[in-house]
Image (cartoon, rainbow, N blue to C red; front, side):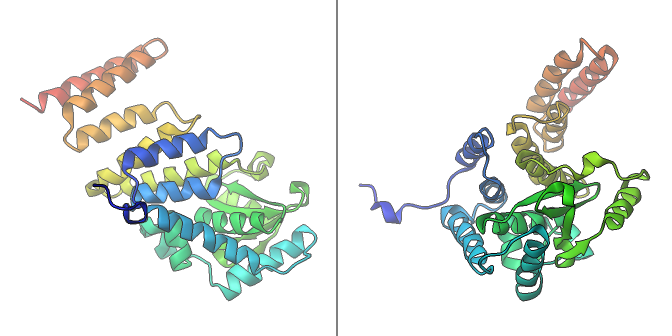
Length: 285
């Protein structure tokens, strides 16, 4: 006999989470917070439905603490900085780059610490719920938020507690990260799925420096591949990770599938990938 519904475990399995993530990513207007929380539930199975709901409720509660009747980009930026940066203490430091939790929205809400892009997600979601004209700005190497008309360039840096950013600040960031002047395209409002892919790229980069965390790299690649638009080379990266994790036959098979795809445009690269696939199969001998 099945237990009553309220006693059922609220922790969806990995396949269900991935299915919901893929479904939400294909919505006409994907929910940024939900995608980040589903990502977090894949990373942290203890989160469960209750944890996802609790995080959404906290974002709602924070939005409810913003003053009523705010008008204009600068006023919104100031109100968010006062609430999230000063009163709630959301900010970041160099140490946060070394923690996986810094890329998980539910952990950022709990710790009040995170990477620039996750702190920006908090700002975006709280501001959006309060009716603010808000958007993300994917500057090279540093994500920030903008308010009002993008042409006004009212920017704030959540990683620095919401410090207002000048055009010169943005130019210095771009020059420091790329060695080139700021390009207008860098100030275009970031799309939801581009934000999610950038978060997953950060997680893959974190795992790449920790060979013992191939499991994290694998689920980050898997979720990236579920997005409607993603770099094709991720399929090869996934195959390599499978080999690294000891799944030699699956990894070799996926390498060969990828080689077939690139063969028409890069036959030399395809042959190199096939050699790697044969080397992976030989590890079973």
